[in-house]
Image 1: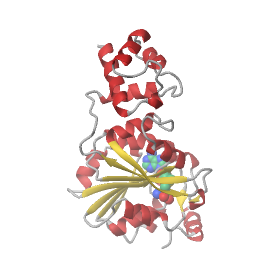
Image 2 (image 1 turned 60 degrees about the horizontal axis):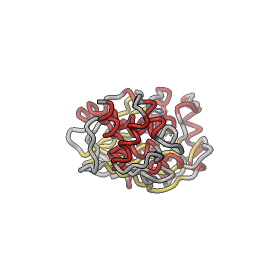
Image 3 (image 1 turned 135 degrees about the horizontal axis):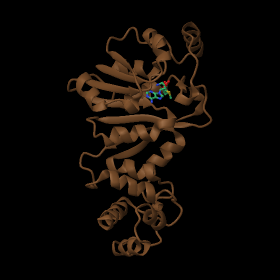
Image 4 (image 1 turned 135 degrees about the vertical axis):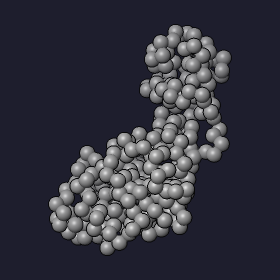
Length: 286
Ligand code: SAM
């Protein structure tokens, strides 16, 4: 069954009365070269278990299932069930869970479904929850070997930018705290049905075994990052002092003491300086 073939897809849709839900980020892959590449580069292999987020009609699911020992796929749209029953029929190593990934207890799922296998995550992510899904995968400290996901090109560029560069955003710094992001390859908009208005890219996130930075209150650290980047082209002392109700003069004095210019913008700070900024806020908040 060739799920990148447009007439095959249309036949499946007609047979099962399926139509796209745009708000769920349903842009399905129709370029036959992309899914095998995601699976290979994502580490799909014998002895490995894969989690997929968002099956669509199962085009990537099949590539994962033919390489891995087991695939657990999470899909929110139950309207895809009759299609998936057909497209995944030949695989006895695939389980599709119809649920919202953001509401899914992934630690429990991994413990229950994969019996000690190495676990990877491969997905063509729904664009509207790219950052929350990635942060969930990282923040929950799941025992995952590799994360390989397709995101919109702009998000890929933002995520893979250097912390402390003009392209860096709050998501860049937050992800870099846990993992090293890498852009693997670009996928043009014509590779999807329906075709979106932008290109995409596949990225990998390699979680640090020994994280270079460690903070004792990650929630506060990410809030400091969010606030610092809330007006990223402007001086960060303004939003940070306002949000945490700290006198600006005291904050800037402490920033200077730790080698951060009082007029610094968040996009100018490397990771060590963002950690220093967090420490200052933590101390001043008492
Ligand atoms: N993997 C398929 C492909 O590459 O053709 C589909 C990818 S499509 C970009 C994203 C998929 O994620 C859709 O099938 C959509 O229904 C599903 N989805 C959207 N929001 C979701 C959520 N919160 N939890 C689980 N799946 C979701």
